[in-house]
Image (cartoon, rainbow, N blue to C red; front, side, top):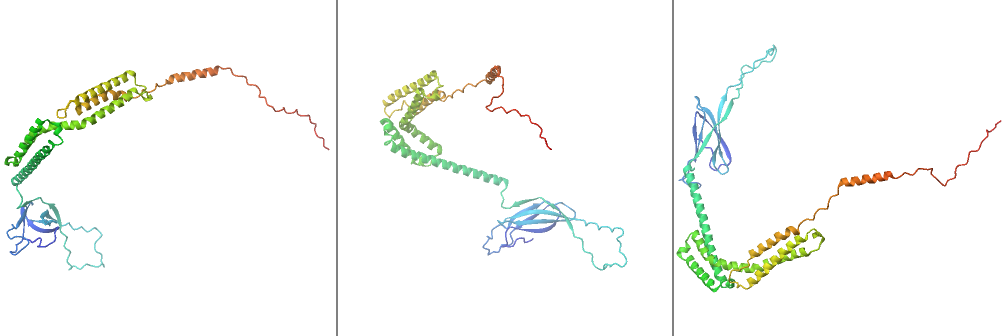
Length: 385
């Protein structure tokens, strides 16, 4: 036994121990004797920590095995490495070269002085090892723990979803109980109001019973769907009534824009033909007639019945007109015709030929206003004596 780390020593320290072993062997790490009055660790705590199974070569003579034990920052004992130390034979002494014999009169060494021992050399080989802890789960226990964790996580998820669905049902009952006598009153008949109120009361009574307090997610969903089949048509009528005018205004605005385009004499629409304008005009007139006819029919119906002019119908009609008019209205202008370069070259050649056929004027002497120079006078030679 070797005491590697004393009580209260620093962490993140590696210590080395050298053993003489042949073949596989085991190193066990454990606590030292625990004092009976210790307040840092209970006396019932297991003293064994882990074992390191080291694979070493089997030889006739035990080899030196260097084992490096580390205590990390968390105080965990680990085996950093295990090395086999194989001693190598000493190097042969170098032979004396010729002509290097001792000469007479040279200083002789003291024969009695001991020769220095040669330094030993080792071949280090890393050894394979495995670590086994006494508190580690085996594969079966680990698989069971993973399954238990997954089962508990799934149970928590189902419980959370069940509670959320129960709260959704409770919130819907409270909300619709007030709306049916308030903002939704004009959008349902007396019979529908009575039937819906009765369904809300029955669902609320069930929810606060023993059966409803501890039920499943699927049951809460079924109860919610049962009451929604009475309330959803009423809510849809309210949404349609509140959104219809905005959608009608949008369609009217689009029709006005398209009419201005059809009647426009702007130069940017000059390439639009009369037939294309007639197509746009027909689409706008048809949509406008349909819209005013449906508005008149809708105005004759009370708000407590399903509408015959829905927001979806108006949006579909607006898209129908846009698909017919937009391609014509945004049709690009045709490009101007390109000039033929061959025709231009031919015209230039004809012009040059005509210029060459013009008669050239004969060139005469240039007339100037200057007088001609006087004739030179005859001169006699000067006589000299």
